[in-house]
Structure formats: C-alpha cells, structure tokens
Length: 366
Image 1 (spheres, rainbow, N blue to C red):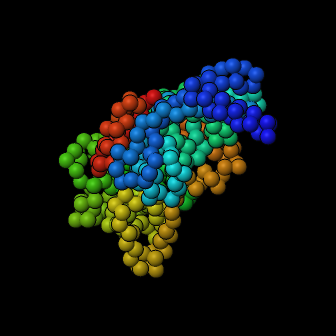
Image 2: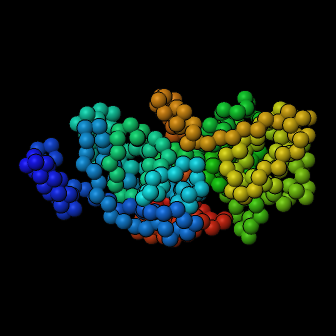
C-alpha cells in the first residue's frame, strides 16, 4: 500500500515538473523542451479549426531524435486531413503537416546514423510538420544533403518524388517521347516539366484559363515546358497542330479528374497509360469505352504515401530516389516551386490562401 502511494506521489511530482518545464532524466536535472504547433482537435471544413498551441516535448529516449523544424509546406492533402476526407487520418488531436525539413539538435545515446546539425525529412505521412520542434524515433526520419536551399529541401520529398516515380514507373519512355498532363501549374506539374526536360522528354501541359494566364504560360515555359495550352483551347481546337511536331503521348498524368482528365485520356496514343494521382475537380473521371477497347489504354493510380510505405523496409530504394532528385536540384535542373514563404506565426493567412483556387504554394518558415 505504501509502495503504491509512493508511486502515485512520484507520478504527480513528475507531472508537476513537466508542467514547470524541468525534470530528472538519466540522472541529470535538465529542462524539458516545448514547441509551438498547429493543432486541430476536430475535423472541419474550416481552417479555423487549426490553432496555435504550446506543447511539451517528450523526453529523449535512447533511439529518439529531437529536431528543430526549419520549413514546412502547406499542401492540399494537409487540408484534406484537417477536413477528415483524406485516406490517412491521424488520431485527434493532431498536429498538421506531412512534409517539411528539420535540423537535428539532439540525439539519443543509441542513435548512430544521425548527428546534431544533420538535415532530415519525414519518412511517412501524418508526421505533423507544422511545429517548431519534435521528438521522434530515428526510424521516422531520413537524412538529406545540406547543399541545396532550405526551400528546395523542404519541398522535395513529396511532389518532385511523385513526378519522378510517375515518369519512371509506368511507361518505358525514351528521349523524344511525349508526356501530357493537366494541372501543369501544380507543384507536381512543375516538377514533371523539369524532370521530363532532364530526360529529354517533350511535355504537353494543360492548364485552366485564368486572368493571369499569359504570365503562367511564360513561367511554365521557363521551366522547360514545350507546350502550355488551356483546357478551353484543347476543347475547341484539339491538339492536331501539336502532333505534327511531336509524337502522340504514351503517358498521361491526371490530377484533376472530370472533363480535364478525359481530355488527357482522349489524346493518348495506342497502348498509352493514364496515371491518376489527384482529383482536384472532385468530379469522376469520364472514360469512353472506345479508349479501352480500340486504343488499349491502361488506367493506373499513384499515391506517393503508399509507395513509401511499400518501400519502408528498403531505405536504400528510397534514398536512391531522393539522391536522384536532389542531384537534379543540385545541378539546377529542378527548381523549387514558386512559393510564398510565410512566417510561422502568420499561419492563418497561408492556410486560407491554400484553401482558395489558383493560389501559389505556401511554405511555413519556422
């Protein structure tokens, strides 16, 4: 009975010390760390559900790492998780953000692969990157080189890797082959343009009409796009003039769905593959029977999160892909998306902007 009382008193004292920010760990009296984090405690269509909170960090274990976050993008998938509509949902309350770059500041005694000062990115979705610091297991992270920009490193592990895999995994493309995509101004679309150019592939890039369309066309062509055409132009005039200059595409990439996805599908060559990796229009993909019967088109889906999970035990494969993408960035063949860098305390305006159409990517800077 006395032993149980002693244990309860010790637990109460530990809780008090944690609240005060000090504690006795590993025989050493040391401060406990806290972080600022963007937390949502319920699923909601409103970004107002995301609020800034101050959270205590757990003590460092033998196998854990304390990381200071440097930058974290806001992607549409992040908002889908807040809304509760994404295939992966974290237990509530949850810290938002799936992608970001951090710097190791402290490691546990048994951590061998990482040292303070190393740059790291999360291995998997649901990490919760919208925070100033985090303590996690060494196996939750993968090291990345420090010889590219913070912005480049923070935005490279999801969208450019998605582009890289789609260009390598679904069709045996050779120099001079053509790829057609919609949503070409998205972060993945911009990466597709640049990686395709590095492989000497031609790209046909569909965008939706908008007030600043001319400016956007110039930006995408500056990245290496061969053709940038609005969906409205394709609907009215087709792509006959383009196919007089380049072969019909064997690979189509669809992140929009609905009529836009059908436009990509209808312009594929015989035996082509349509890869769907998003559905921004929230409309079902319309598939004419003749595309399957007479053109032998293959329909595939791709989700970078699932690919990473399938290869979680094969870090060499993941590292090989990241090394290839980082080399493109290092050589100047892959630039970060044209982002708006937002100081962490101003997170509300970045969330609100991301929820709107035709907005640039926002990256929180810690």
